Image (tube, helix red, strand yellow):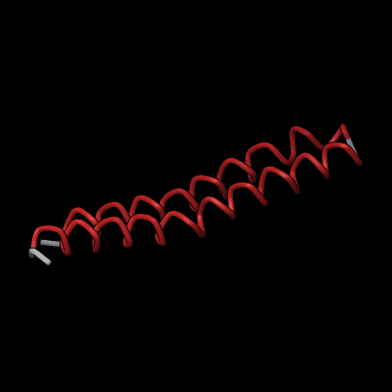
Length: 73
């Protein structure tokens, strides 16, 4: 195989695997928040900000994977 094809494969694997965990985490965050709000609707205000912060931290991991994928030469 040519070197360029292996480089593209490495980039694809890096971003794919690096986004898998955060994608699952954000899904679980949303599911658990909706479950908590369904059980106690008055807690919506208290859950919203921590849910957003946790989702932002999970997405930051995905952005790190994107940076790594761009740095592969």
